[in-house]
Image (cartoon, rainbow over the protein chains, first blue to last red):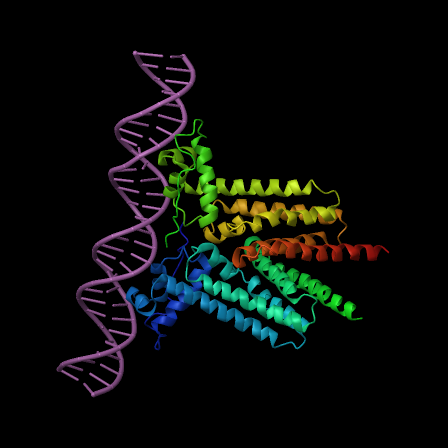
Length: 208
Length: 208
DNA sequence: ACTTTACCAGACAGGTCTGTATGGTAGCAA
DNA sequence: TTGCTACCATACAGACCTGTCTGGTAAAGT
């Protein structure tokens, strides 16, 4: 009932150059919202962590909903960047599909991993919350990325393969969250190899 | 911000035989907690829906946490019963593994499906909440069930196969929740067929 | 007739949350 | 100096939540 551990300010007045209030707020929100949940964390805790006045929050954001949305946007951008970095390492579409799973092994292994931010946020927020659009967008982006790659790879049914890979992706996040099992990433990747090869082998066979 | 639709009592004084307060409370809790989330639903809404006095709640349960735990216990029991019903229809371990996925197609298709109750509850509740044990138990039960079946089926690595199937299971729940896509169950099942056959074919090959 | 049990209805206290309003401070530019 | 901007600190209103308490009702047992 008391998850408010030590929320000491990120940087005090001692720092010669202080980042603007908006940045500090967003940084604090990302940390606290992800760690303890959007609902559990009140704005008082966020502003204390950011070392910011309450008025500065409502000057930079339209309210808590807006701050939550900004937090989710930032998560989305970070995930996209991480995946695209891994994508750039490979050329073949098959390897690129697997790179999506490579991008999740590192986060899942962190001790403070708490699951997919979008799954958690959707579970917490009411159905009409603003932030749900971001969650949907993030999922659509991943699915369409995989779908395009599956088409390039010559999968017999690219959309189905993409959705199946998303199942593994979400499942790995859920397992790591619930069972504290970082191996889920590797197992998801191994399963993805099977699904991808099966979907593409059929195509080759039908051509032959 | 206002998800409190029409929470009319389940049965009024008109009903000649009234179910005891405890049952009505649990029924109302199951509906509201699952539909709108454990955190969002206050006890006032539960007792109104159940047509029960507040004192009756605290006479039958130790508080909200206890009611939440009872709700999760009921969900676990229901899932277990549903899965075991499907299991009884088959004999071969391979078919029994797939039966676990069969048990989820019907719930996922319901319009008011809101995802896996345990995933949602874990995402919502603080880390030290009582109900998390139930969530862990439910996951462990599923994993061990699949693991035992995988062993019977002669999988080369039963534990890995079981965990991979759980990935698909959780992923299907997540996809149905987030994307409103009931087809996720069928796609998960199809992927499970591939994983199972691959894991058991190896065993056969190594024997040959 | 009396008591016990189970229950409903509502008031209330103590806490938390969001969002607003007030007042004070430091830096910078004209 | 004067004025402007960005900001911190805090108090406060209104709403909501949990949990306790009091009082009234009706049926069943003794």
